[in-house]
Image: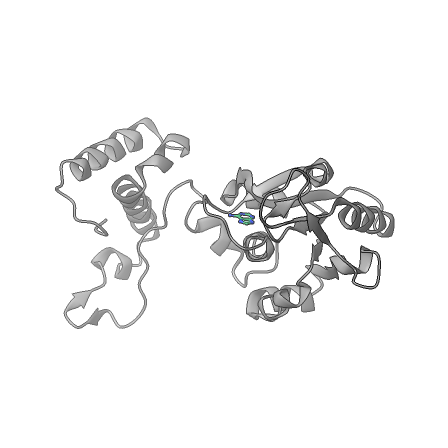
Length: 253
Ligand code: ADE
């Protein structure tokens, strides 16, 4: 997968991209992230990428021309399927489903805004506008890194163990089941016996139930979209009601 990132601060991506999983993905040729400085498409000695807002008001607005030129050049450089993503707090909320969808694409171009906002015409370039949450950051760079990380780790071959992405939080539409490693007892806290049993069917059933109970207790909103059997739905709604009645403490599964 190729990802082109357009930003006025391309350097801030480097340490994140060099980090273990994303770095290995690039070394293995599974992920090809190319960083671009928006100023390379700006004009004048100052290579200005922002300007005052028409109609007045505080703060600067990002100019449309550098983004339009950048996209024209990047599309010419890599003809074929390309999904243009604009990071903005006004976008659709980014979630695991969106990450899975993007991980199946050949080529992403991620546009990062800054300052108070960007010229409205820039939105017309985007196939997808994405927000990472209902808060306003100083720019689209951190959100873009979140998207690259979440998408990059889903590319086949990037994670050491192919099952790990498929089994974790949200892949069932549920929170992840509790995990343990050695020692079996630590400071009086024991690993549940079932995990030491070697009985894979029992372990799988326990994990599924724990994931359900945990989701019902901590994030009942996720249950609406989760793929559950009628029995599981009944169990989850019982757990959610118990939680509602205050019988489960916060953090308890
Ligand atoms: N740019 C500024 N805040 C943002 C957010 N929450 N999500 C995506 N892009 C942003």
